[in-house]
Length: 192
Image 1 (cartoon, rainbow, N blue to C red):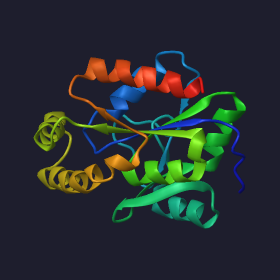
Image 2 (cartoon, rainbow, N blue to C red):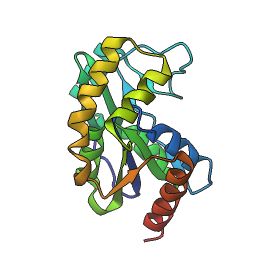
Image 3 (cartoon, rainbow, N blue to C red):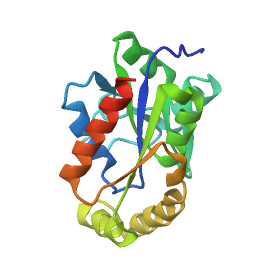
Image 4 (tube, helix red, strand yellow):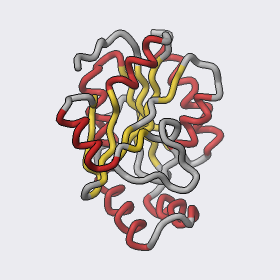
């Protein structure tokens, strides 16, 4: 499946718990001509999640089929048999509506998208004020086991090393200020 590169995309990446999802939701509420790219994943939905709204829940075999079909812009095996990626059909759908695609993706996925779309993509790394604050936020969610938190913190230390490869680093030490700054960054990019 060949992807027509006729639109812009904005990429938000960060370690889990840095606030990227909250910032992306803020931007989507602002009528900026953005539409969220719903990622595909291999995991099962959590109790509050809806298929094709929160993620395209494909299952492990379904995700592997999409890889074979080359139906993904990018994908990654984040943890063993835990795949996430972006469907080409999702980007085509958004661009056909005349909107810019906004991504909430992991760090490697964000870099892969930026590499593919070059100047048509703007990549923003949302950085927590500190490693300790990130751990505090993850624990504050109360949604994950100690093992998962440790796994996410280990991954975060690796992801933070990639921050300089993004077009912009947005430090989220005050959520309101980070949202306002993100809004201005996106507006400036879309007006280019």
